[in-house]
Image (cartoon, rainbow, N blue to C red):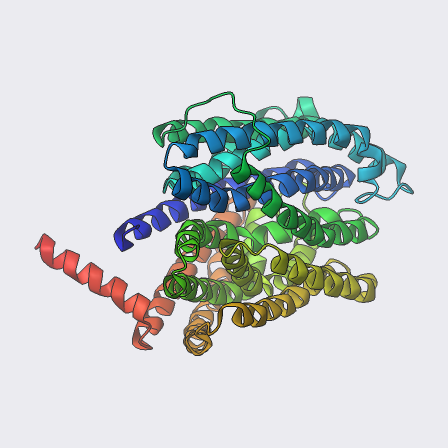
Length: 524
């Protein structure tokens, strides 16, 4: 069983590498905004990426989610030698499925594009079709990444998985910096495919160190692989149901003002940055641990891991939500407001981001709860909860989108996700009994108090910005001042937040302080 020290190091490694990857991702999005602006080209690129991502996510998420429980079962019943056979067999099968999906995707690209681009705008629609066809090979590389991700997580190797965004974003940045004038938006789509292929190459060294060796295995009768694929079915459908939200949102955005899809996408990318850095680390670490606990009928240990995970999520997302709402405008200005990205684009992105941010807590908690269900080999409940989420979201979108634009689309997601996570909690309690709800409420109250104190500090950004900007004139200097002030204020705000949690008696913070004190004493 993993020691606390090992888990802490793994979590820290994922957070650090994810942070680097997300920073590269911000550079990527900033360059796309500067090179293409909120135009038909950028709208078409976002639409085509969503079209190919839906297919690849259906396969990748389903396989990666059920890979660990399947491998755990195979190893516990047949021994560690089964690990290699299972992985290679899974790689072969998902590769075949992916190749079929690529051919079908290219053949039906015009129909798939209709979900994201109206045919009444021929220029936009035709461009989306071209980019969808060009980007389809990404499916097979994404599926392979999904298998190796599960393999490494099961092996306790989390650093490479946490850093997976780095090679992808580096390919994007190189293309946008040097080749945009030649390749345009079509070249950017090719770069997206090469970027995911680079992720496969990036995961290979750690996979080999963890014992992976390529073997030609193709056994459709393997009961463990079949069991994983059967479990993947509901996850596949659940992912598809959730992707209806994306389809509806982007489809409605396409019918709004030019650039609305790009604005919606940019706001969502900023919102999910916290998910990608911290919440991914938590779920990646706890999923194998919960799977081992629940598969051995150790319900108490499984609940403990879940309890710690949910509280960790609250400690991270509550202050992030308040901070994002307060500092949305300077963040958007620093990342996007330059080149062809106009002032109105920045204003719209800020408003949309604030509406999306309201879903940050519920999306993060939902990710943890879904992992609990998957650890219990229950893939049906997340599907039903996801279906409720979609129905509420689509209904709200149809009611408010035409009145509130991208803000209404983002707010609908936030409301629907919050209702869905509450339903998920109730159903999980019925399934496994007491969840320690009182401890969650106590953690939430303490976190809110500390977050409000942090928010008061964050508000000092605006007078500081006004004071310092009075002495600069060039655009480069203005952006640099905004960035430095933002980093300074955020650093102080985080420190105040941590101090408040310590004073409020939060055990996790006090444990960290105790560990630091012990290490300082040893070094003396």
